[in-house]
Structure formats: structure tokens, C-alpha cells
Length: 102
Image (tube, rainbow, N blue to C red):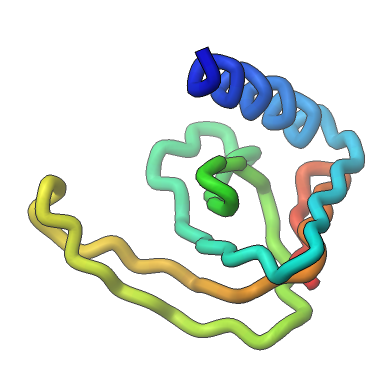
């Protein structure tokens, strides 16, 4: 049940992001964030994947205001590498389908 609830919550939040609503994510400790290009975007509104806390959100544009680096990991079941931009964020903020990471 918890997994279904988490997926449902993520879907609702993704709809808010796509609609342009404001969302803040902040925790007491840094949030490890992975960013990937979304090859499945069809209309330009979901160009980027923002992955954190075992959730994935899509956004049109990203501003990163903290140090970041690239990371490549071999994923055996995919038979290839996944490449990410990664950082430790204090705040993740969505507004008008744009993500700002601070």
C-alpha cells in the first residue's frame, strides 16, 4: 500500500509542477539530487528528470545554484551506463515548471 500511496502522491505533485504551481522541498539534512535528460519528452515540458528521496519529477528547465558534478554508473540490468549531474541540495524549488536547486 505504501508504494502505491507514494506513487500516487508523486503523480499529484508532478501535475502541480506541470501546471506551474510552486513547490518547496526542504529537509533537516542535505538532499542528494540526481539530474538526467529525459529522452521520452514529447512536448518540451518534461525535458529533465529530477530524482531525490526515491521520487522522480520532470521539469522544463533547471537552475543549479550550488556546486555539482557528473556521475556515471553502470546499471547491469540495463546493460549500460546512466549519466547524471549530482549535488547535495538544501532546497529544491519548483515554480512555473522550472526547478531551482539551492
